[in-house]
Image (cartoon, rainbow, N blue to C red; front, side, top):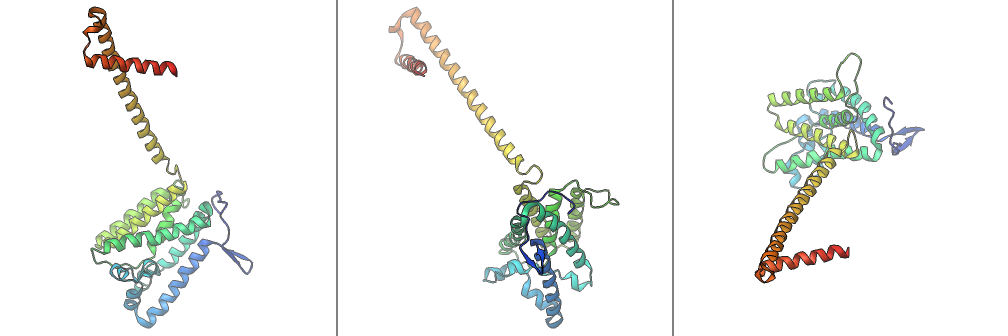
Length: 283
């Protein structure tokens, strides 16, 4: 482990042949298995058929095909169409960053984070897809979400000595480049999923307590509360001053013209002041 903080819940899910299997290791194995199965099915049925069976298609989800809410992260078509080694790089990044995030937040929170990265963007896209026809199949946004979680935990960490960039800066650079590439291709669905996964990962880490956690929110609430109390206090001071000025003028009138000179409104104000004074004395 490169970073020393370790959650009390950082424990293996189970043991296999005397070796611990952590949550991130299990997720990594599932993605590798999904890649292998996808390759076999594509060789048998073709990429288009497999894509149609697994992609997140909101209209199909609305008609009961709920498995699409998580099957869409089975693989990235780019892995096969371009004979790319991008899958291997993604698995290496998932192993490294996922392991560090799980160590920090524990296995339960890590599994919840992964589930959130898969389901929350899918559910939001399903809602959007009710009005606009979209389809999506890609696992890379979830992996990028794990990277964002790591960058949120360790924003000042340096990925290597030969890259003079912090993790926070690298995250923004990669996010910007990916957005521009998708924008150039008019792939607004990919942009939506990328930014949603980023927001989910960042928000989840803040809720868990990374950085200053949610102190900015509590500070804002406390500031609003303080301002409200101060405003109420100022209003009360002004009201007390007005009441005091009113009583002073009434007493001055009594001294000059007697009690009989008071009208009904002035008598009521004088009575209220007397009652308030008695209550204060009783305290």
